Length: 193
Image (cartoon, rainbow, N blue to C red; front, side, top):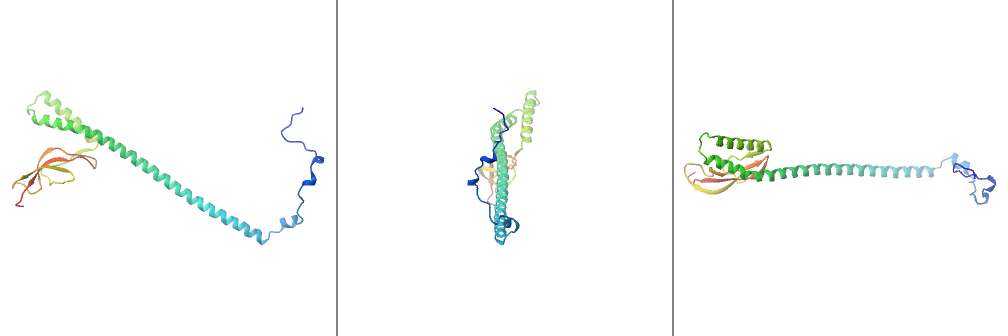
């Protein structure tokens, strides 16, 4: 058996000429002249194609905008998650800062090596948290702000203006612009002002 390239060798005598479609009578005339009907159908098809193209371009633009919005939303959610995780971690360190402050307030103010070491560790912890964006909320002598301070006690006095913070019981902190913990304070109540 001889090998072929996949094309069949057809003997022209074997063709079924009986079942072939007859050629058009005006075949030569149709190809030579284009009538108004064929022009209108071509322009109608062209209009349909233009409308379909415009629809697809509009759809593409909308999908691109939707993708860009989804990408921005995902980036924002990831940033929010990182900040939330950072806030949780720093919140867990705030009691340690409080303990350092209490230890340094109650310890004798002498120059012992132990006190110097504790002060150094406290300073290092403060510096590390400062780099992360932790800021102490100023309290003593400031006017009371319910968004930043939590009033534990109202003290009647004539020595300070009304609603001025007299004493800070526990320091409050902000992480960047977010409140982590409000300051616990004693607030002046001066009825004469």
